[in-house]
Length: 229
Length: 80
Image 1 (cartoon, rainbow over the protein chains, first blue to last red):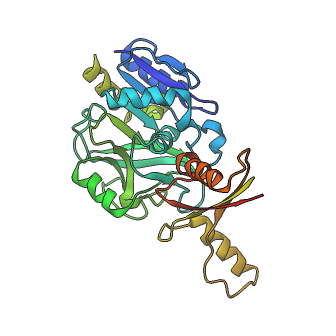
Image 2: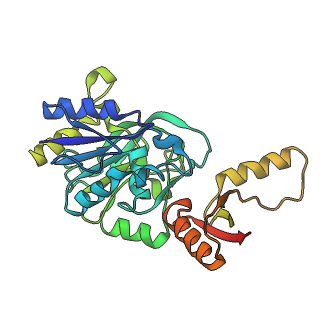
């Protein structure tokens, strides 16, 4: 399996996802600068977290029009899996690859803590290493993670199994308190219709080895290697 | 020509920053504020001299980059 990690000015989780992928794949992913209009032939494209372009205008808005994005959209439309984490999720919604938008957190604060997620869709290359409704602990660190879409779009997402993760309590209950940012219907991650593009605010790459304090994120990378090797 | 663009959240979209400003105004003793909606104001200096063409150009800019029409409305004012 070959993977590319996209690097924007202001990306700061590109090395974390590089390590998580390297540990799972046994080889280094290719680091690709956002200004490149071509991408190597890869089986997975990762759009990392951070603050691309300083979050100017709107988080992810300017990165969504980087030269490399045209090729990412092209590959995604051909079925290549694309994983966007945190700022990567914001970039994917701004580029139109995923529906909805990530607004300012309802509490207005930057939130950095571990949260619990329920895995809502398991029939994907990203999530097949988890059980349906399995509760996992994954860190979040964001200011703009409040997922919003019109009600009819949210209904479609739920009907098509495009909601990948939801914020829940440790016991798996969807409560207002377990929702850290005001996201509509507690949505933490969404897929496109074809299920080859996943965007999520939580950071699975930050809990993917025991030295980091947990491995709840690791099954995602192992599943990708299994599916794409 | 100059373009003045106002970008605001669509009605019905919750505006947590507006709410915080509203509470702060209340805390400062400014009563009588029913609601606060916060937005963005952008000025462009354009090469185009034709009002209609300028409007068309700026409209495309708003749709492609300056506003996110999932949650935002925009209004454009073109002047000399």
